[in-house]
Image 1 (spheres, rainbow, N blue to C red):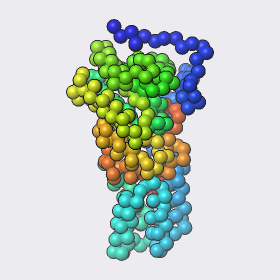
Image 2: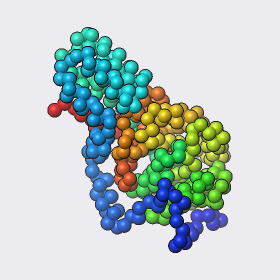
Image 3: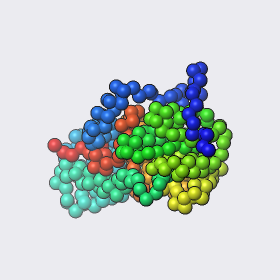
Length: 345
């Protein structure tokens, strides 16, 4: 019945369409063993080693060391640093207004106490949205729809999620809904083959909503726990493509009125304040219920998570700290703040 579930051997001469769509690295037994060992490393240490090298962390570390005593320049530099680190004008202004009010009330004896208050402010912004993704066993399959603009690492994130869910004992299926690019379908199929996960795919330019519908039908009939549906990367300004996402959601609801049960928006952490515009557009189109912020190991400044938290209040489910499967970590607000602005010794 579901002939599209059958795996087809890939011709030897077949190559990815472009370097950007290169195949994910093969997982040897040694690599898997190393990955398993790495996964037990405390998330706080992993975040410290990556996010701790961000622009935010570097800037603020030097700022307080240059101003051991309270002075007007400290507050001016602090406000400039917050905005430069992608915290955003609105959130930066809120933070600074509170700090100036406390300073006027003589609550700070030195810059160290101001440092501690700033840490508490940052935690207070992030803690309400640090909510791990919970797979609701009452929905079978639990349908997870992934969305995002081009190049954010969406398909790679799906592969990492699949591996994580497998390790948690869940059975799952993938739907290759990015039908605009043959290489994207191929990449997802490779992830599926290497992790022994069934992938539903149709030809290039097939209707993405049809792919999602067939995949959910197949996942239901075979009793899978989870279905992860990929979608084409699209600019949030492309209204016709955003409308297509809404169509996918409507089609899924024909088989399960509550599907998708999670709409996961993947955001590139290096995007800066443009992430706000992306989140707003996708949220209006399909109702985003969770965020994944990737590439926080690169040139990301680190502050955009605060802007997203204050603007939308949408849970941040995971952050991406590197290329390895275990580098997709559940978001920990305390660990994140500790990496950006470590506690005083």
